[in-house]
Image (cartoon, rainbow, N blue to C red; front, side, top):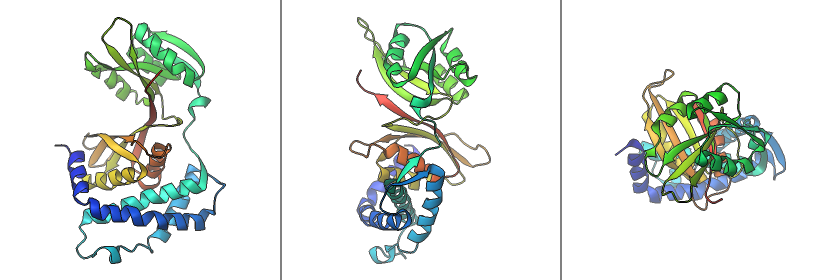
Length: 302
């Protein structure tokens, strides 16, 4: 059983108490966000929103009624972390609802659409699917998927189209290593099949750095921390925003931190369309020691 599963089980045990937090904290965030930003039509960069976030968190710290809802003398540390996490999520959500936020991430439709890939029938079909989302899509054929990764890293192409998974062979680990080696960021995913073949391939469109995409349904990030318990509040905050942890892997010490986690979150069914973007804002505001790997969207039907 991995750390994420243990955390999920602990969350389930405290569900009743957590539900009380979920119900109570949004009203605080809404009221004070209105006080800070007004009723709407405010415009802010994500940097300005981050400053507003810390100002609002400072105000919120004085209005929590945990003492009346739960006996603070008996509240275990994970539940105190839970309140802080849900409060953080609701603060980001309230601020984003009061402002049009301009992200530091470049938008997908602002990128030149030159794609590099190793040509075959499957990758040609993947390009056909992806190109409708790109500006002025063009193609540069390479001798291998690794060369496509290298072309994006060296700025010879804007995107690499790569086979990630096969219904016959599973995860294509060699390509995954190349994606990690060049630190490429996922943008789009799709499934490709060919007439007369039982094999289906999952393809990804990758950029050199994270790109802002409309209706993103997934987020990948690396979290650096000195305390393994940091995952607990982050999972709760993501859950409050409508995103569920889909994958976690501890990679050991890195950059002077005792714990490093590779994390993937997916937008939950019924969540707000901008839930993943809200999670990226939460990471920026509340988790300074993280590296955003990418926001992405999975294309389900073509």
